[in-house]
Length: 85
Image (cartoon, helix red, strand yellow):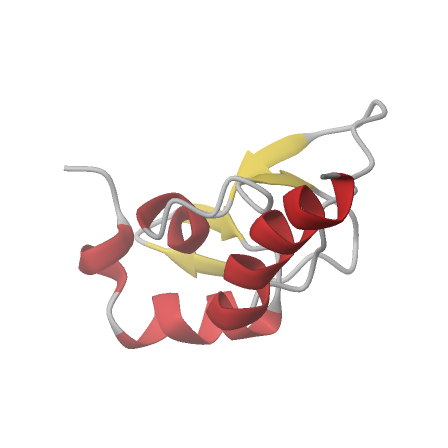
């Protein structure tokens, strides 16, 4: 049963290009939301720990953070698709 659960959680992350797997580090430090993963309902990657190496993009004076470079590239191509309405 545990193997099936991990497969169900990991498969969408792999298909969406998310850099994380089912295990995440939720210890202290600043957090942000990967808007691409939120749009895709990829719950394993929505919560992003912000560090100096976290993929990011500046848009209209706001900094957006992402779980992976792939999500940053997707956001860059069409930011309005992923931003909350």
